[in-house]
Length: 111
Image (cartoon, rainbow, N blue to C red; front, side):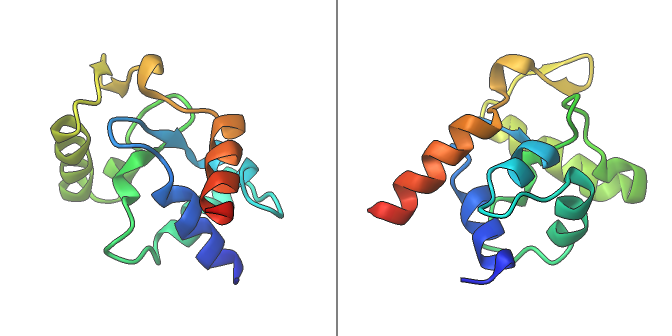
């Protein structure tokens, strides 16, 4: 499995209605990567991977800085999944941490 295949697996393991930060996704990889690197890799994300579930560490939609249209699409997709926002950021109650992602990744690989 390539590092990008593993990244897509981790991102795909983020449950519906939840979000994870780039850094937490990076920590869940077999060979951990920085949030910055995960963000760069996410630019290559296949269309069948729920890219919209990955946000900045403070819950903000960092994609809006590069493309307001994509940022709005990300908010729309998260809202459709009933992700809650607090002052324009994903609510901490909807965020999932790296340890939980590690558990989900392990479960996905063993089933």
